[in-house]
Image (cartoon, rainbow, N blue to C red; front, top):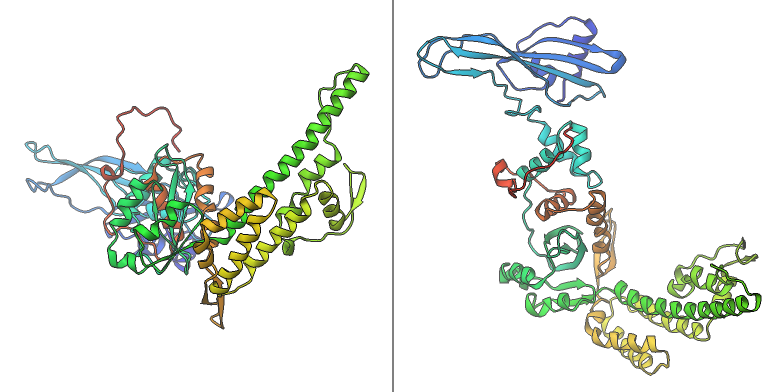
Length: 500
Protein backbone atom coordinates (compact mmCIF):
# COMPACT_ATOMS: atom_id res chain seq x y z
CA UNK A 1 0.00 0.00 0.00
CA UNK A 2 1.11 3.54 -0.66
CA UNK A 3 0.61 6.32 1.85
CA UNK A 4 0.62 10.12 1.95
CA UNK A 5 4.04 10.87 3.46
CA UNK A 6 3.15 14.26 5.02
CA UNK A 7 0.24 12.87 7.01
CA UNK A 8 2.12 9.74 8.07
CA UNK A 9 5.24 11.64 9.15
CA UNK A 10 3.11 14.02 11.25
CA UNK A 11 1.31 11.17 12.98
CA UNK A 12 4.41 9.11 13.76
CA UNK A 13 6.72 12.01 14.67
CA UNK A 14 4.26 13.32 17.24
CA UNK A 15 3.88 9.81 18.61
CA UNK A 16 0.15 10.37 19.08
CA UNK A 17 -2.54 9.05 16.79
CA UNK A 18 -5.22 11.66 16.04
CA UNK A 19 -8.26 9.98 14.47
CA UNK A 20 -9.91 11.78 11.58
CA UNK A 21 -12.79 10.92 9.29
CA UNK A 22 -10.51 9.76 6.49
CA UNK A 23 -7.38 8.73 8.37
CA UNK A 24 -7.33 5.20 6.97
CA UNK A 25 -7.38 6.57 3.45
CA UNK A 26 -4.65 9.12 4.16
CA UNK A 27 -2.44 6.67 6.01
CA UNK A 28 -2.68 3.49 3.92
CA UNK A 29 -4.65 4.52 0.84
CA UNK A 30 -7.27 1.92 1.77
CA UNK A 31 -10.81 2.44 0.60
CA UNK A 32 -13.06 1.10 3.34
CA UNK A 33 -15.50 3.60 4.87
CA UNK A 34 -16.49 1.30 7.72
CA UNK A 35 -12.92 0.74 8.97
CA UNK A 36 -10.82 2.83 11.32
CA UNK A 37 -7.25 2.85 12.63
CA UNK A 38 -7.07 2.36 16.39
CA UNK A 39 -3.30 2.18 16.82
CA UNK A 40 -0.11 2.90 14.92
CA UNK A 41 3.51 3.05 16.03
CA UNK A 42 6.98 2.45 14.60
CA UNK A 43 9.99 0.42 15.71
CA UNK A 44 13.01 2.27 14.32
CA UNK A 45 15.57 -0.40 15.19
CA UNK A 46 13.98 -2.91 12.84
CA UNK A 47 12.27 -0.58 10.31
CA UNK A 48 8.87 -1.93 11.29
CA UNK A 49 5.60 0.00 11.35
CA UNK A 50 2.58 -1.39 13.17
CA UNK A 51 -0.94 -0.42 12.18
CA UNK A 52 -4.12 -1.86 13.70
CA UNK A 53 -7.39 -1.58 11.78
CA UNK A 54 -10.88 -2.60 12.91
CA UNK A 55 -14.48 -2.11 11.84
CA UNK A 56 -16.31 0.88 13.30
CA UNK A 57 -18.86 0.03 15.94
CA UNK A 58 -22.41 0.42 14.68
CA UNK A 59 -25.72 -1.41 15.09
CA UNK A 60 -25.91 -4.65 13.10
CA UNK A 61 -29.18 -6.28 12.00
CA UNK A 62 -30.07 -9.70 10.68
CA UNK A 63 -30.80 -9.62 6.91
CA UNK A 64 -33.54 -12.26 7.35
CA UNK A 65 -35.51 -11.47 10.53
CA UNK A 66 -34.17 -7.91 11.05
CA UNK A 67 -33.33 -8.60 14.67
CA UNK A 68 -30.26 -7.07 16.31
CA UNK A 69 -26.99 -8.96 16.05
CA UNK A 70 -24.74 -9.32 19.05
CA UNK A 71 -20.98 -9.89 19.05
CA UNK A 72 -19.62 -13.34 19.83
CA UNK A 73 -16.02 -12.13 20.06
CA UNK A 74 -13.23 -10.90 17.81
CA UNK A 75 -10.79 -12.43 15.37
CA UNK A 76 -7.41 -11.15 14.17
CA UNK A 77 -5.78 -11.38 10.78
CA UNK A 78 -2.32 -10.30 9.62
CA UNK A 79 -2.35 -9.63 5.85
CA UNK A 80 0.88 -10.41 4.04
CA UNK A 81 3.61 -8.02 2.95
CA UNK A 82 1.98 -4.61 2.71
CA UNK A 83 4.16 -2.21 0.75
CA UNK A 84 5.35 1.24 1.87
CA UNK A 85 7.46 3.78 0.01
CA UNK A 86 10.28 4.25 2.54
CA UNK A 87 11.70 0.70 2.86
CA UNK A 88 9.75 0.09 6.08
CA UNK A 89 7.92 -3.17 6.65
CA UNK A 90 4.28 -2.74 7.51
CA UNK A 91 2.77 -5.02 10.13
CA UNK A 92 -0.94 -4.62 9.47
CA UNK A 93 -3.30 -6.14 12.03
CA UNK A 94 -6.97 -6.44 11.15
CA UNK A 95 -9.47 -6.97 13.99
CA UNK A 96 -12.97 -8.11 13.15
CA UNK A 97 -16.02 -9.36 15.06
CA UNK A 98 -18.22 -12.39 14.73
CA UNK A 99 -21.96 -11.77 14.93
CA UNK A 100 -25.00 -13.87 15.82
CA UNK A 101 -28.68 -13.08 15.53
CA UNK A 102 -30.38 -12.34 18.86
CA UNK A 103 -33.57 -14.06 17.70
CA UNK A 104 -33.47 -17.59 19.20
CA UNK A 105 -35.45 -18.93 16.25
CA UNK A 106 -32.90 -17.59 13.77
CA UNK A 107 -29.49 -19.26 13.41
CA UNK A 108 -27.91 -16.54 11.28
CA UNK A 109 -24.21 -15.85 11.95
CA UNK A 110 -21.66 -13.74 10.11
CA UNK A 111 -18.31 -12.02 10.48
CA UNK A 112 -16.94 -8.60 9.57
CA UNK A 113 -15.74 -8.33 5.99
CA UNK A 114 -13.04 -5.84 4.96
CA UNK A 115 -13.22 -4.48 1.43
CA UNK A 116 -9.45 -4.44 1.00
CA UNK A 117 -8.91 -8.12 1.95
CA UNK A 118 -9.38 -11.11 -0.28
CA UNK A 119 -11.90 -13.60 1.01
CA UNK A 120 -10.29 -16.52 2.84
CA UNK A 121 -6.82 -15.17 2.01
CA UNK A 122 -4.05 -13.69 4.10
CA UNK A 123 -3.36 -11.02 1.52
CA UNK A 124 -4.94 -7.77 0.46
CA UNK A 125 -6.53 -7.13 -2.89
CA UNK A 126 -3.51 -5.17 -4.07
CA UNK A 127 -1.19 -8.19 -3.74
CA UNK A 128 -2.35 -9.76 -7.07
CA UNK A 129 -1.58 -6.49 -8.87
CA UNK A 130 1.87 -6.32 -7.26
CA UNK A 131 2.49 -9.96 -8.23
CA UNK A 132 1.59 -9.22 -11.85
CA UNK A 133 3.96 -6.26 -11.80
CA UNK A 134 6.83 -8.43 -10.57
CA UNK A 135 6.11 -11.07 -13.22
CA UNK A 136 6.90 -8.44 -15.87
CA UNK A 137 10.52 -9.34 -15.17
CA UNK A 138 11.28 -12.63 -16.92
CA UNK A 139 14.36 -13.09 -14.76
CA UNK A 140 12.11 -13.70 -11.75
CA UNK A 141 10.58 -17.12 -11.30
CA UNK A 142 7.22 -17.73 -9.64
CA UNK A 143 9.00 -19.20 -6.62
CA UNK A 144 11.01 -15.99 -6.16
CA UNK A 145 7.89 -13.83 -6.42
CA UNK A 146 6.09 -16.12 -3.98
CA UNK A 147 8.86 -15.72 -1.41
CA UNK A 148 8.76 -11.96 -1.83
CA UNK A 149 5.05 -11.76 -1.01
CA UNK A 150 4.92 -14.64 1.48
CA UNK A 151 2.51 -16.72 -0.58
CA UNK A 152 2.79 -20.08 -2.31
CA UNK A 153 4.03 -20.39 -5.87
CA UNK A 154 0.72 -22.10 -6.68
CA UNK A 155 -1.06 -18.89 -5.69
CA UNK A 156 1.24 -16.87 -7.96
CA UNK A 157 0.44 -19.18 -10.87
CA UNK A 158 -3.27 -18.96 -10.17
CA UNK A 159 -3.29 -15.15 -9.89
CA UNK A 160 -1.42 -14.77 -13.18
CA UNK A 161 -3.73 -17.12 -15.05
CA UNK A 162 -6.81 -15.42 -13.62
CA UNK A 163 -5.78 -11.92 -14.67
CA UNK A 164 -3.67 -12.43 -17.83
CA UNK A 165 -4.83 -13.89 -21.12
CA UNK A 166 -2.97 -12.20 -23.96
CA UNK A 167 -4.70 -12.09 -27.36
CA UNK A 168 -3.09 -12.68 -30.72
CA UNK A 169 -1.98 -9.53 -32.51
CA UNK A 170 -2.72 -8.82 -36.13
CA UNK A 171 -0.15 -9.94 -38.70
CA UNK A 172 1.96 -7.16 -40.19
CA UNK A 173 3.53 -6.68 -43.62
CA UNK A 174 6.89 -8.18 -42.53
CA UNK A 175 6.92 -11.09 -40.10
CA UNK A 176 9.69 -13.26 -38.70
CA UNK A 177 9.06 -16.91 -37.85
CA UNK A 178 11.29 -19.18 -35.78
CA UNK A 179 11.07 -21.93 -33.18
CA UNK A 180 12.24 -21.96 -29.57
CA UNK A 181 13.02 -25.03 -27.50
CA UNK A 182 10.67 -25.28 -24.50
CA UNK A 183 10.49 -29.08 -24.09
CA UNK A 184 7.14 -28.98 -22.32
CA UNK A 185 6.44 -32.52 -23.48
CA UNK A 186 7.20 -34.77 -26.45
CA UNK A 187 4.37 -33.10 -28.38
CA UNK A 188 5.37 -29.55 -27.45
CA UNK A 189 9.15 -29.58 -27.73
CA UNK A 190 9.52 -26.61 -30.08
CA UNK A 191 7.16 -23.65 -29.81
CA UNK A 192 6.61 -21.43 -32.86
CA UNK A 193 7.17 -17.69 -32.43
CA UNK A 194 5.78 -15.00 -34.78
CA UNK A 195 7.36 -11.54 -34.58
CA UNK A 196 6.77 -8.19 -36.24
CA UNK A 197 10.10 -7.36 -37.90
CA UNK A 198 9.65 -3.57 -37.78
CA UNK A 199 8.81 -3.19 -34.08
CA UNK A 200 10.30 -6.44 -32.74
CA UNK A 201 6.99 -7.16 -30.98
CA UNK A 202 5.86 -10.76 -30.54
CA UNK A 203 2.56 -11.26 -32.35
CA UNK A 204 1.87 -14.73 -31.01
CA UNK A 205 3.40 -17.97 -29.75
CA UNK A 206 2.12 -21.38 -30.89
CA UNK A 207 2.53 -24.53 -28.77
CA UNK A 208 4.28 -26.47 -31.52
CA UNK A 209 5.78 -26.08 -34.97
CA UNK A 210 4.11 -29.29 -36.14
CA UNK A 211 1.79 -29.03 -39.11
CA UNK A 212 -1.37 -30.13 -37.28
CA UNK A 213 -1.05 -27.05 -35.06
CA UNK A 214 0.26 -24.51 -37.56
CA UNK A 215 -2.18 -25.42 -40.36
CA UNK A 216 -5.28 -24.95 -38.21
CA UNK A 217 -3.85 -21.75 -36.73
CA UNK A 218 -2.92 -19.97 -39.98
CA UNK A 219 -6.05 -21.06 -41.83
CA UNK A 220 -8.06 -19.62 -38.93
CA UNK A 221 -6.63 -16.16 -39.69
CA UNK A 222 -8.76 -14.16 -42.18
CA UNK A 223 -7.58 -14.35 -45.78
CA UNK A 224 -7.32 -10.55 -46.09
CA UNK A 225 -4.95 -10.41 -43.11
CA UNK A 226 -2.72 -13.17 -44.50
CA UNK A 227 -2.64 -11.56 -47.95
CA UNK A 228 -1.31 -8.34 -46.41
CA UNK A 229 1.97 -10.06 -45.47
CA UNK A 230 4.66 -9.00 -47.96
CA UNK A 231 7.78 -10.65 -46.52
CA UNK A 232 8.30 -13.73 -44.35
CA UNK A 233 11.73 -14.11 -42.74
CA UNK A 234 12.82 -17.59 -41.59
CA UNK A 235 15.82 -19.88 -41.41
CA UNK A 236 16.41 -22.65 -43.96
CA UNK A 237 13.67 -24.92 -42.62
CA UNK A 238 11.59 -26.03 -45.60
CA UNK A 239 8.18 -26.14 -43.82
CA UNK A 240 8.63 -22.46 -42.85
CA UNK A 241 9.59 -21.43 -46.38
CA UNK A 242 6.55 -23.28 -47.74
CA UNK A 243 4.25 -21.08 -45.61
CA UNK A 244 4.43 -18.51 -48.41
CA UNK A 245 2.84 -21.02 -50.79
CA UNK A 246 0.24 -22.31 -48.36
CA UNK A 247 -0.81 -19.34 -46.23
CA UNK A 248 0.91 -16.09 -47.33
CA UNK A 249 0.59 -16.27 -51.10
CA UNK A 250 1.47 -12.61 -51.63
CA UNK A 251 4.60 -12.78 -49.46
CA UNK A 252 8.22 -13.33 -50.50
CA UNK A 253 10.22 -15.90 -48.50
CA UNK A 254 13.50 -14.66 -47.03
CA UNK A 255 16.32 -16.88 -45.75
CA UNK A 256 18.23 -15.15 -43.01
CA UNK A 257 21.84 -14.51 -44.13
CA UNK A 258 23.17 -15.47 -40.70
CA UNK A 259 21.88 -19.03 -41.06
CA UNK A 260 23.46 -19.42 -44.52
CA UNK A 261 26.90 -18.50 -43.17
CA UNK A 262 26.26 -20.62 -40.08
CA UNK A 263 25.57 -23.61 -42.34
CA UNK A 264 28.90 -23.04 -44.14
CA UNK A 265 30.74 -22.64 -40.81
CA UNK A 266 29.33 -25.98 -39.64
CA UNK A 267 30.81 -27.66 -42.72
CA UNK A 268 34.18 -25.99 -42.15
CA UNK A 269 34.12 -26.94 -38.47
CA UNK A 270 33.57 -30.59 -39.43
CA UNK A 271 36.55 -30.42 -41.76
CA UNK A 272 38.72 -28.96 -38.99
CA UNK A 273 37.59 -31.84 -36.75
CA UNK A 274 38.63 -34.36 -39.41
CA UNK A 275 42.08 -32.75 -39.64
CA UNK A 276 42.35 -32.83 -35.83
CA UNK A 277 41.45 -36.54 -35.79
CA UNK A 278 44.23 -37.26 -38.29
CA UNK A 279 46.79 -35.66 -35.98
CA UNK A 280 45.32 -37.47 -32.97
CA UNK A 281 45.59 -40.80 -34.80
CA UNK A 282 49.21 -39.99 -35.63
CA UNK A 283 49.87 -39.26 -31.93
CA UNK A 284 48.21 -42.51 -30.84
CA UNK A 285 50.38 -44.54 -33.19
CA UNK A 286 53.49 -42.72 -31.97
CA UNK A 287 52.50 -43.43 -28.38
CA UNK A 288 51.92 -47.12 -29.14
CA UNK A 289 55.39 -47.41 -30.72
CA UNK A 290 56.92 -45.62 -27.75
CA UNK A 291 55.23 -47.95 -25.29
CA UNK A 292 56.36 -50.98 -27.27
CA UNK A 293 59.99 -49.85 -27.38
CA UNK A 294 60.10 -48.83 -23.69
CA UNK A 295 57.87 -51.64 -22.46
CA UNK A 296 55.74 -49.12 -20.55
CA UNK A 297 52.05 -48.24 -20.64
CA UNK A 298 50.96 -44.59 -20.44
CA UNK A 299 47.30 -44.02 -19.59
CA UNK A 300 47.10 -40.50 -20.98
CA UNK A 301 49.14 -38.19 -23.11
CA UNK A 302 48.93 -34.42 -23.50
CA UNK A 303 47.75 -33.00 -26.80
CA UNK A 304 50.43 -32.35 -29.33
CA UNK A 305 51.08 -28.78 -30.48
CA UNK A 306 49.14 -29.39 -33.70
CA UNK A 307 46.05 -30.69 -31.89
CA UNK A 308 46.25 -27.82 -29.41
CA UNK A 309 46.39 -25.23 -32.21
CA UNK A 310 43.44 -26.84 -34.03
CA UNK A 311 41.38 -26.67 -30.84
CA UNK A 312 42.30 -23.13 -29.82
CA UNK A 313 42.51 -21.33 -33.18
CA UNK A 314 39.36 -22.39 -35.04
CA UNK A 315 38.47 -18.73 -35.25
CA UNK A 316 41.05 -18.32 -38.02
CA UNK A 317 38.63 -20.02 -40.44
CA UNK A 318 35.28 -19.59 -38.72
CA UNK A 319 35.46 -15.89 -37.86
CA UNK A 320 34.77 -13.18 -40.42
CA UNK A 321 38.07 -11.59 -41.41
CA UNK A 322 36.66 -8.12 -40.73
CA UNK A 323 35.74 -9.11 -37.17
CA UNK A 324 39.08 -10.60 -36.09
CA UNK A 325 40.74 -8.59 -33.33
CA UNK A 326 44.49 -8.39 -33.77
CA UNK A 327 45.96 -8.58 -30.27
CA UNK A 328 49.60 -7.87 -29.32
CA UNK A 329 52.21 -10.53 -28.66
CA UNK A 330 51.70 -12.62 -25.52
CA UNK A 331 53.37 -15.72 -24.12
CA UNK A 332 51.62 -19.09 -24.55
CA UNK A 333 52.43 -21.60 -21.82
CA UNK A 334 51.58 -24.69 -23.87
CA UNK A 335 53.60 -23.75 -26.95
CA UNK A 336 56.32 -21.99 -24.92
CA UNK A 337 56.30 -19.17 -27.43
CA UNK A 338 55.32 -15.53 -27.66
CA UNK A 339 52.65 -15.15 -30.34
CA UNK A 340 50.46 -12.44 -31.84
CA UNK A 341 47.38 -12.82 -34.04
CA UNK A 342 49.33 -13.06 -37.30
CA UNK A 343 51.56 -15.84 -35.92
CA UNK A 344 48.51 -17.77 -34.68
CA UNK A 345 47.02 -17.56 -38.17
CA UNK A 346 50.29 -18.71 -39.75
CA UNK A 347 50.60 -21.71 -37.39
CA UNK A 348 47.00 -22.75 -38.02
CA UNK A 349 47.16 -22.44 -41.82
CA UNK A 350 50.25 -24.66 -42.04
CA UNK A 351 48.39 -27.63 -40.52
CA UNK A 352 46.46 -28.49 -43.72
CA UNK A 353 47.14 -27.61 -47.36
CA UNK A 354 43.47 -26.76 -48.04
CA UNK A 355 43.06 -24.26 -45.19
CA UNK A 356 44.27 -21.34 -47.33
CA UNK A 357 41.73 -21.99 -50.07
CA UNK A 358 38.92 -22.66 -47.58
CA UNK A 359 39.61 -19.28 -46.02
CA UNK A 360 39.70 -17.59 -49.43
CA UNK A 361 36.47 -19.20 -50.68
CA UNK A 362 34.64 -18.47 -47.46
CA UNK A 363 35.69 -14.80 -47.65
CA UNK A 364 34.25 -14.65 -51.17
CA UNK A 365 30.75 -15.42 -49.88
CA UNK A 366 31.05 -13.15 -46.84
CA UNK A 367 32.11 -10.32 -49.11
CA UNK A 368 29.15 -11.06 -51.36
CA UNK A 369 26.85 -11.14 -48.32
CA UNK A 370 27.99 -7.66 -47.27
CA UNK A 371 27.75 -6.06 -50.71
CA UNK A 372 24.76 -5.30 -52.94
CA UNK A 373 22.85 -3.15 -50.46
CA UNK A 374 19.22 -3.06 -51.58
CA UNK A 375 20.23 -4.48 -54.97
CA UNK A 376 18.68 -7.96 -55.28
CA UNK A 377 19.04 -8.06 -59.10
CA UNK A 378 22.81 -7.50 -58.99
CA UNK A 379 23.09 -9.95 -56.07
CA UNK A 380 21.32 -12.62 -58.14
CA UNK A 381 23.91 -12.39 -60.91
CA UNK A 382 26.80 -12.64 -58.45
CA UNK A 383 25.17 -15.55 -56.60
CA UNK A 384 24.85 -17.50 -59.85
CA UNK A 385 28.58 -17.00 -60.41
CA UNK A 386 29.39 -18.25 -56.90
CA UNK A 387 27.14 -21.30 -57.31
CA UNK A 388 28.97 -22.24 -60.49
CA UNK A 389 32.39 -21.57 -58.93
CA UNK A 390 31.70 -23.58 -55.77
CA UNK A 391 30.19 -26.41 -57.81
CA UNK A 392 33.39 -26.83 -59.85
CA UNK A 393 35.64 -26.49 -56.80
CA UNK A 394 37.63 -29.60 -55.78
CA UNK A 395 36.85 -29.05 -52.06
CA UNK A 396 33.81 -31.13 -51.13
CA UNK A 397 32.41 -28.78 -48.48
CA UNK A 398 31.97 -26.07 -51.11
CA UNK A 399 30.31 -28.52 -53.49
CA UNK A 400 27.68 -29.11 -50.80
CA UNK A 401 27.49 -25.36 -50.18
CA UNK A 402 26.86 -24.81 -53.88
CA UNK A 403 23.88 -27.17 -53.78
CA UNK A 404 22.52 -25.34 -50.75
CA UNK A 405 22.78 -21.94 -52.47
CA UNK A 406 21.04 -23.34 -55.53
CA UNK A 407 18.21 -24.83 -53.45
CA UNK A 408 17.52 -21.57 -51.58
CA UNK A 409 18.47 -19.21 -54.40
CA UNK A 410 15.37 -16.98 -54.39
CA UNK A 411 14.97 -16.67 -50.57
CA UNK A 412 18.67 -15.73 -50.30
CA UNK A 413 18.32 -13.08 -53.02
CA UNK A 414 15.23 -11.68 -51.29
CA UNK A 415 17.33 -11.16 -48.15
CA UNK A 416 19.17 -8.34 -49.93
CA UNK A 417 16.05 -6.20 -49.56
CA UNK A 418 16.60 -3.19 -47.28
CA UNK A 419 14.04 -0.95 -45.62
CA UNK A 420 14.31 2.70 -44.61
CA UNK A 421 13.75 2.83 -40.87
CA UNK A 422 13.84 5.93 -38.67
CA UNK A 423 16.48 5.97 -35.95
CA UNK A 424 15.74 6.49 -32.25
CA UNK A 425 15.84 10.28 -32.41
CA UNK A 426 13.93 10.39 -35.71
CA UNK A 427 16.79 12.50 -37.07
CA UNK A 428 17.20 10.53 -40.27
CA UNK A 429 16.24 7.25 -41.90
CA UNK A 430 18.74 4.42 -42.15
CA UNK A 431 18.71 1.28 -44.27
CA UNK A 432 17.93 -1.94 -42.42
CA UNK A 433 18.35 -5.38 -43.95
CA UNK A 434 15.60 -7.96 -43.60
CA UNK A 435 16.94 -10.63 -41.27
CA UNK A 436 16.00 -12.79 -38.31
CA UNK A 437 18.38 -10.95 -35.98
CA UNK A 438 15.62 -9.54 -33.71
CA UNK A 439 14.05 -12.99 -33.45
CA UNK A 440 17.35 -14.66 -32.51
CA UNK A 441 17.88 -12.14 -29.72
CA UNK A 442 14.34 -12.77 -28.39
CA UNK A 443 14.83 -16.54 -28.33
CA UNK A 444 17.18 -16.14 -25.37
CA UNK A 445 14.28 -14.99 -23.18
CA UNK A 446 12.12 -18.16 -23.29
CA UNK A 447 15.26 -20.29 -23.09
CA UNK A 448 16.39 -18.47 -19.95
CA UNK A 449 12.88 -18.68 -18.49
CA UNK A 450 12.89 -22.45 -19.00
CA UNK A 451 16.34 -22.79 -17.46
CA UNK A 452 15.64 -20.55 -14.46
CA UNK A 453 12.37 -22.39 -13.79
CA UNK A 454 14.10 -25.79 -14.10
CA UNK A 455 11.66 -26.75 -16.85
CA UNK A 456 8.13 -25.69 -17.77
CA UNK A 457 4.98 -27.77 -18.04
CA UNK A 458 2.12 -25.36 -18.80
CA UNK A 459 2.28 -23.83 -22.28
CA UNK A 460 -0.58 -21.39 -21.68
CA UNK A 461 1.23 -19.95 -18.68
CA UNK A 462 4.56 -19.68 -20.52
CA UNK A 463 2.96 -18.05 -23.56
CA UNK A 464 1.10 -15.44 -21.52
CA UNK A 465 4.18 -14.81 -19.38
CA UNK A 466 6.32 -14.10 -22.44
CA UNK A 467 3.75 -11.82 -24.04
CA UNK A 468 2.98 -10.08 -20.73
CA UNK A 469 6.66 -9.30 -20.18
CA UNK A 470 7.51 -8.18 -23.72
CA UNK A 471 4.45 -6.17 -24.79
CA UNK A 472 4.35 -2.50 -23.83
CA UNK A 473 0.56 -2.30 -24.09
CA UNK A 474 -0.20 -5.50 -22.16
CA UNK A 475 -3.36 -5.26 -20.03
CA UNK A 476 -5.12 -7.49 -17.53
CA UNK A 477 -8.62 -8.90 -17.84
CA UNK A 478 -11.42 -6.61 -16.72
CA UNK A 479 -13.22 -9.61 -15.23
CA UNK A 480 -10.71 -12.13 -13.84
CA UNK A 481 -11.24 -15.80 -14.46
CA UNK A 482 -12.47 -17.92 -11.59
CA UNK A 483 -10.10 -20.37 -9.87
CA UNK A 484 -12.12 -23.23 -11.35
CA UNK A 485 -11.44 -21.95 -14.88
CA UNK A 486 -7.67 -21.85 -14.48
CA UNK A 487 -7.05 -24.81 -12.19
CA UNK A 488 -6.03 -28.03 -13.87
CA UNK A 489 -7.58 -30.99 -12.10
CA UNK A 490 -5.42 -34.02 -12.81
CA UNK A 491 -7.00 -36.33 -10.23
CA UNK A 492 -3.61 -36.94 -8.60
CA UNK A 493 -3.09 -36.39 -4.90
CA UNK A 494 -0.74 -33.52 -4.13
CA UNK A 495 2.49 -34.49 -2.46
CA UNK A 496 4.28 -32.70 0.40
CA UNK A 497 5.57 -29.16 -0.25
CA UNK A 498 6.93 -26.20 1.68
CA UNK A 499 4.38 -23.42 1.93
CA UNK A 500 5.75 -19.90 2.31
